[in-house]
Image (tube, rainbow, N blue to C red):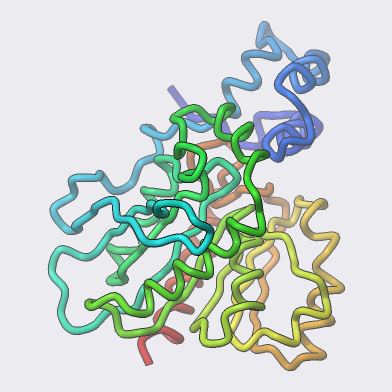
Length: 296
């Protein structure tokens, strides 16, 4: 079966799905609003099913791929939890000390797509670590709707402190070279921006369509930034002009790319919002950026 793309959907349906994904619209609300766009026998339920992630179809690197070593590891939380859990992936054959990349998920927790992203990072000769922000609430539940509901219960101040703690742990990995970068998607893009304002020795940050910090916090950023934006992402892009002005005023080393016509989530190849060309270019730029800033 041919996989659907964003072009197969009415733009208004994609906007509704964006609101649904980010918790601004319930499942019932999406179905009620999308019903008028159902065509050719495809119901509102069918539209939602077509838009929801297809993890197995999109997987690029198998969990048991011989080129990598993957495991679930724990590190202490500063918030009194027993620990934070994450997915650690290394190249199977490590020569010398390697840079480390923190991979931060969307607002669903550590799902199969983000684990696949971590494996892709490892194949580019980095150590990748992808924490699960939902671990304190039982972890990613294996269901996207349940994960979205769990996310609403997170204490974001504590969660952000956990991500800062994760960077500190990664700096000290025996196989690491002491340099840590972060790449994040959607919610994770916002975390990447946040970490850049809170971790002075962060070596590089790459937010994909992530929310921006307050403009005055840009003065705290020491890490070089590579920012990816979707051209059709009005919600996130609305904050970019003020953030860019603040980055310029603070003389932050940044590089920004807006990919024309593509949707928020264009790098996520599990959904029809995925754009092959934009994702390929953005990923090439991301790996080049990490090579430039984490290996020197």
